[in-house]
Image (cartoon, rainbow, N blue to C red; front, side, top):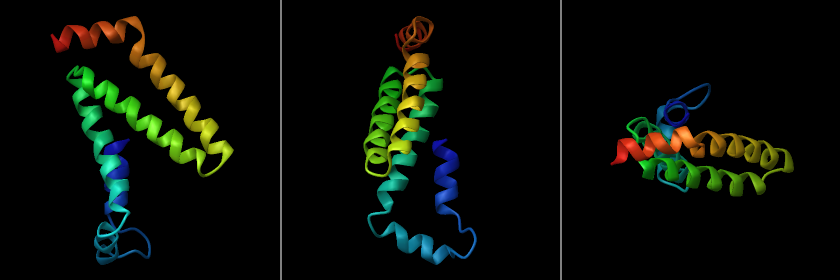
Length: 104
């Protein structure tokens, strides 16, 4: 998801030109791209079994929970549901064994 959203956020679509996308990078909007890049890095290194990448994804999802709480109740509920599913799959016994085996 991080790679797709990073690419979609940087490429010009619709009425937005490439110059406008570059101008966005000079402002606060660059932090959106940094979080997308972190999601991409976390996903890649999770495939390599790095335990820190698993925790990076958890931190990334907590960040999204906080941001969604600022928008609407529905976004908060949806992000909390997604977060719960991600936590289940990341911390069940087989996943923990995978991260312990590969990291050591």
